[in-house]
Every structure is written in structure tokens, then in C-alpha cells.
Image (cartoon, rainbow, N blue to C red):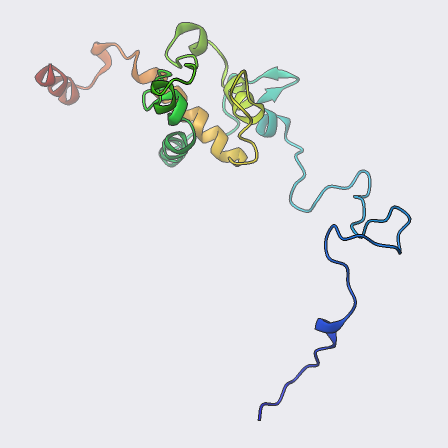
Length: 177
């Protein structure tokens, strides 16, 4: 026989299930409305720059924190997961869904898209744009910034003058042609 150190009273107490009907409250709902002006713990978004990609209401042209190799690698991983189906591995707008008939998104490599500030890209990922829906529920804030960093890296990689490519890499480029 087993001895228990607690009673089952806590398990057997009366309680409401979330979203169940209630005759106790005047609105007939068991779930209580949020108290106006409160913020769930850990969800205060007091940094406009970090959470919106804007500074004083304008799209930011710099990242809200220094970029590292780890951030770029995370950005590549998240880009591959969330962005390549439409935007393609190269960011040229030729993803798998486009090859199957979905309308092509703009290429990240076009001059007009490259000219946009980084805050614009963050805003598009957060709020959606055109046919693209918001990724805010699926991609955390820091991952959105990492994706933007990777997009910038893709853009820069297509515009590097040969003179700036290190000799060891330049010799491999000429061998592959």
C-alpha cells in the first residue's frame, strides 16, 4: 500500500475551463477580460527600434545591435525555412512556389529593393506586404532581424567588385569559369 503526502482536494476543486460558459459572471463567460493598461509579463515592447524597425516613425537604416557571424548564420537558417519557398535561395524571387505558378515576389537583388532601409524589411516580415502575410506570430523579433541581416548579406554578395575578392577566392572563381 502507498502513502500519499497530499490530498486530492486540489484536483477535485471546482474550477472553470478556459472559454467555458459561466452563470456567475454577468457577461456569461468564465474567462475574464484583460485589465486595461496591463502588459503580460515579459512582453513589454518599449524599444520602438527593436520591435518595429523604426526610429521616430521612420524606417531605420541600421541594425538595432551589432551583427555577428552567429546572427548571420541564424538568419540564413531562418531565411531558408521561412523565405526560400517564395524568394528562392538567392533572394531572386524564384522560389519553389513561384516555379509552380504562384506570382513572383520582387527580387532582393533589384536596385529598388536594395535601396530600402533595413527597417523596411523588418516591417515587411512583421506586418506582411502585398501577398506576403505577417510572420510575426511565427518568427521571433531577433530572428526577424537575423533574416534581414542575411538578406543584406545576399544583396552585398552579388555586388562585390572582383578587386575586393581575396586572392585565394579569386583564383577559385576563375577556375570554376
